[in-house]
Length: 398
Image 1 (cartoon, rainbow, N blue to C red):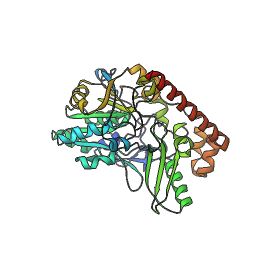
Image 2: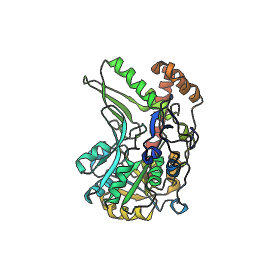
Image 3: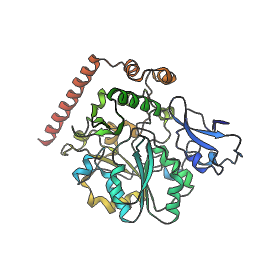
Image 4: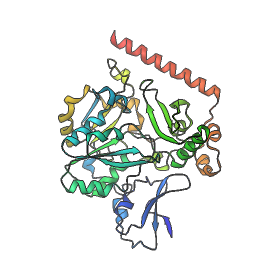
């Protein structure tokens, strides 16, 4: 018999999987609940109450105070390889860090979207495979099975780069139970994680509409420029469906926090509380912060939080394009997700409680209040934003 592993309240559980990874009797499994969120369930007939799950839970165990710090340095940078930058969500700096570790015969752990359209953490140990890790995947990845593999690499002396959400970084550090000098951690700037059930229902609706299986998704297609990204679905029959994020129901449910996880509404790992060496994300507001920048392919923001991170940065900074030191306060002005949890949509509880009885496309429109009028209004707002940014950039060059 399996029950929710009640070591923390359900609304506080991040679904990081550290408890499942550490369990010596393999009696804890991560399964989706009725809302589509990964939760730990324990088989009470096997559990011996050893308490290891409590010892590695990042919600119950804060990192040492010396690990909670302000950034030592914040920089804006881009990858000089245009193809890599185009296929990355922001400026492609992650790939430079990953290549640096691979060159040391190390291993890189990051997220892919597999053939079943599931986000999973995998291990890459060659530069040719790094393309699989590029780009955002707006789903919660399964990282529980990868923690033991990371530990094995570290114990063998291999350099390791691990990238994930802040709660996954904190979970890995608790699972390892000690600091490794050969571990580099990258926390992505995280808006939150959405319901897997909402995602699958939406995908299923599109597959029915197009009479074909979806074989690939690009959550941040930059072919129309960075900053106004499109989500693109590739079908087995060769067709493609794409929409700008502000018009797509799946992305709007995520961005407007209709489908977001409970724990993301009160995230305990914002800013530097994950213990990550680096925080990577988009440098939103770049037109105001660095008006001289050309941003067609995106710009990365990199917070360097630890002495280890500074050492790595000094090794790679000559590989970065347009690398400029910037103010952390300027970064925070344009990207609240670095330091603040999102606020749930007013209809979020009603939506999630009734997921199993909803028709996903029409009901997403209803809960989000999306009509033709609101779509036109959104287009006008986007044009105004682009015009203001353009005028500001011109003024900065005069």
